[in-house]
Length: 105
Length: 512
Image 1 (cartoon, each protein chain N blue to C red):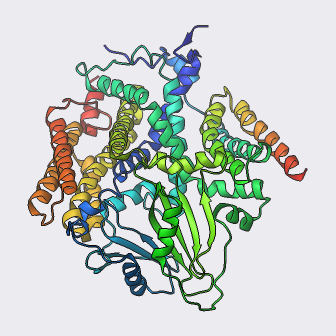
Image 2 (image 1 turned 90 degrees about the vertical axis):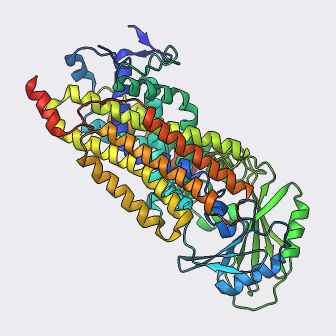
Image 3 (image 1 turned 120 degrees about the vertical axis):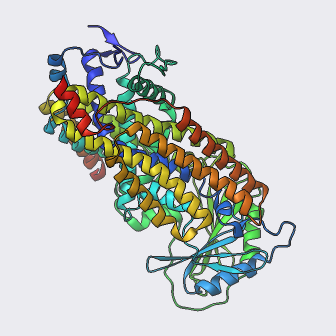
């Protein structure tokens, strides 16, 4: 019998423990990933010194597309739903607050 | 704890990556396949206009072209001088001048023959334009289709990253491809090889596609952060000052001398298109779009806006003379659509796109097969899911071939033939009992259609140019390859789930 080399888990019990995602985790990843990516993009456009306004705006946009999948994956890797929400919301809220402060100042 | 693979991940992290990769694939695999496969064909949209419309081929080799000013005047008088006009100048791939007018969100398109001045109207979309729209908008209303495609780029990126992380033997199995033991193992090997070898290409396409598709979502963030929410200021920074029509009528300068003037300023560039706005008004302008010729490089597009009243330059928009962000942004379209590096690069993109599509399909096959052994009680749900993927993927391949044939020989039926064919294959996938046989038959019919297209054009064309002959030969070769793959490809059943009938499945279950 042949086996798939990408499956390191062997017992059904171990599989049940590690595979699949709760609704909370999935929701946290979808929302938190999007929010984190937007927050990072916004922070870059505000805090990275640019050329003429457009340059830093474009950099922010480009970063957003690159960060989005990475942030979502990072949140999905959280072991519990609570941790996932923490990973999804905390950095985003902090960055948005910093960006808001940057805009005001 | 032992760590696995080139990323030195813990065992549970590899398992988690595998789960993420699996669910991403099964939830978005079919839509992703539609987007990737149609995008692979859409690469040749511009190149194949002249092939698809024989009347647009270089029919009068050696004949003298009419004055461009006269051709522009014909286009203006036909489409109405009161409307803004976008004009694509004749090129090697498209021998006729193409003009589009915009009115109340409606676009009207005409072609003007540069030798006779004849105007051809309402020809509709070509098959490749139709497939391009499928790729860019999934034929959904704008901008929602575009956003969805942009999100698919994010989806693909996540899938590639999680797939790479879930494959700890990536380096060790770099050349492992087992054809014989069984079809599922072959699918698994093919999927992994595609993932590894197309990782860079897929990531670049996913990233650039996401940027292009989600531009509408970036824009508010950009306007808010860089211009304090001032939309007008942001627009001005991008495309220069904007003038409203005043209604004051003045004489217009001829366009060709202005074009020659811009061409003289930028000798290494080629003016490929122009946009005429507010014709007859004191705010009238012509925008010349330039691209570097003959090798179109990254971030070289420029737009020169010139007044049609006094000939002064209103604004020059270029990505090259700005910072790194702008230059990167300007490179997104050329990189995504292979608009640099010539036809050779497009062929490389084409092969990579087909391979990536194959990777998506094999991923679904593996997932379905694994489910069978894990969740037998839910077999019916997976049966329908498998059939949906089978019909959706095979249907798109067959329907695209039918649309290309229709585009060349019966242009009026491109859209209905495409949708009907896709629908029939989708229904057929739920009816047939032998899924693998169905795929082989589909590949054979697709090959036969492509061979017929190549032979038909070679045989029937009145104006067979060397370029058109080459395209015919490529279709012939692709058709034969597809037919050969159908005849010689792996045989056997992938498994009960998704490709065999529910009855057969139940029998197996009860007997065990």
